[in-house]
Length: 270
Image (tube, rainbow, N blue to C red; front, top):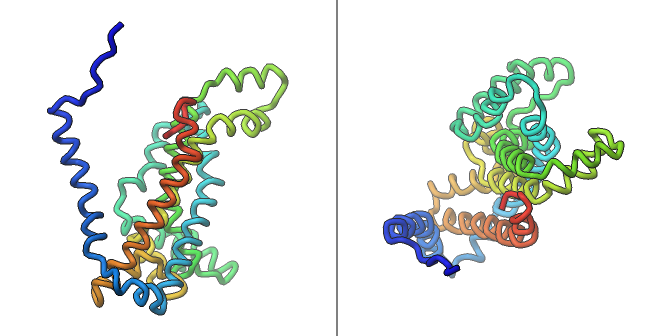
């Protein structure tokens, strides 16, 4: 049987090329306009290293929290039969479409010193969460965890449930089956979700500046540093943007070949 022509029809090729240009040209402009001769001094300026370190640490912690909470949540959405799953899924994915600043305000109203939970926390332990490093992690987790939940839920729905059924017939309980069978099956999807979650947390701005503030060394992440630098020194803002771009690209490229591509033919999210 003759193989069909793999060429792309012109009505699809033209808008596809326009889409590529729309997404890639701003990044090319960032690279072209970068002050390469001033790169070293800009990167060694006070506060740049602290902002980068805080961004990497907080994004990693937010991803860990998202894994601990998001993977079980994804399993509930994909495999359980509880009532109201559709409503629960809608509520879980709201942060994807919610303006990040609104998310920061919502966090403040719940976890602030006078918030629904924050007041009790402050009166009981004396802890005030807003405008701390922990607040950065909370804000990033709030906006990034839905990416992980959606990815893992999709992987769970695509995974072959016969392996879990076989484990059950051999006497494995639900927890053992989840640990020994389900998680290995959806590992590529979990890795994909973790990468997306980490990248989203790394670039978080709105909820962070609203809930955690912008204090150098404590809550000032790289996106916040870029915003401030853009007002005072555009060249510095370009350099800091290049750092974020390089870190994000390196993460996606390194992990895609090692983790995400492995599950392409196994129901994973590639």
